[in-house]
Length: 237
Image 1 (tube, rainbow, N blue to C red):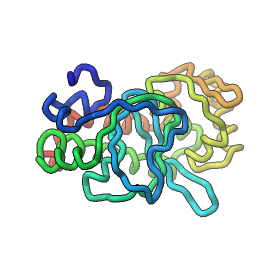
Image 2: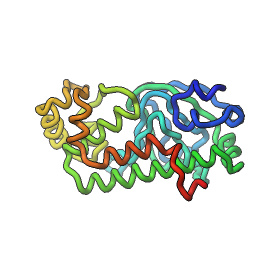
Image 3: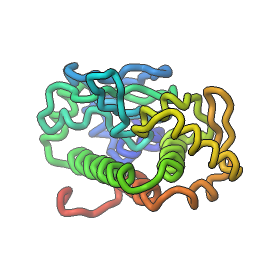
């Protein structure tokens, strides 16, 4: 396999010998495709090339809140490389796409060699932690208008799209709020000419303006996700 053929950040950075040992297989993801569910064994890793998936935490009342987002930079199931047997969260696609998959045992074998694959996987875990921590702080500190702008921008970056088929009810789940609050925030962004929305669809019209409306959390998360393969940190040396 030629690394130049890949869009996924990690796969693009790996040498051909490692890619051969991972025994990658192409995979397509339809809308709402279930990748992981709580309690399921993690038997494959997934590397998105196009599309976007969300990781959510579910509650007893049936509600859910997004705790992670996956795009072309991602390695879904990476916790299995560090000993996790079963998934703790639900992961499913919000934007249809495609990518590659490999069996966990092949990935674990490569990870234990302590080479470039291990280094990149750990760097991605660090980027995931930064995303989770920054999002948690953002949800506690910033208003819904800022948080909605952040979510839309990150989604657009990860999936390379500017239009989302998504309801206000679903956005409320993702951001941990109520539908009227999301409708108000979306209405403000629409009045500013930053987005337009019809029933079940939102389109970004002004990325610079939406970036200005968002909080600093967006650029912090974007920087880590865009550049984790280049970071030189102690944990990956």
